[in-house]
Length: 233
Image (cartoon, rainbow, N blue to C red; front, top):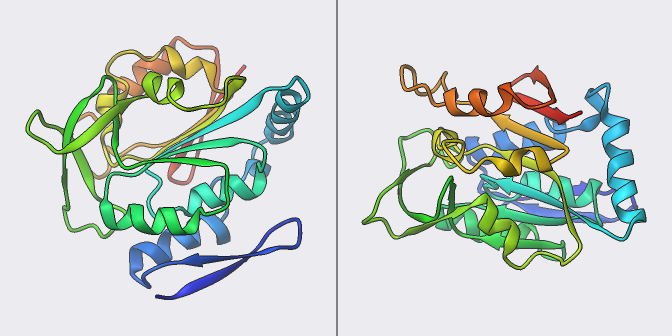
């Protein structure tokens, strides 16, 4: 299996495995070359880093949630740039999850082979032909994939002194379910990064619940490329 070499800020080299597919190469390009999640592109980026440092100084463990972790590129990115954070990574596809596990070895990460939604339940997974980064989950009582809520995720297995820091969400339209109810967790995160999918699922209004959720919250809203950055004021 092909592997790329990543140079970390502390001078180490990490090997990152991929399948050589357009989707795997695309996600690697987005995260490590285009730097889609870099806080350096934000005017408030330094402020967010200072919040991370303040959490550590107060004895807290910053929590980063990565929903739609795919093969682990974004998880490795967070691990490199915020090495003292605890990362909670959620990925529903078995083959992606296997690579996610390999690529995140040695990082402070808890992996969940699951979907995420507003309440616990079960889901089915489908492949609409968009490549390995385009698998979709749908709530399904007969599905064999567990659905975790954000609240249950934050309560299960995280550090006792945990403090929510970043939530990154790229779940191929399932944001409609995630933000349908029980959204009190949103304001606890300093930064929320989300890709919305109205462009991919026209007429379904998959972004509506997210927009309703953040409309009344005291947060900045920035749209950069495919992602929305929502920063707590």
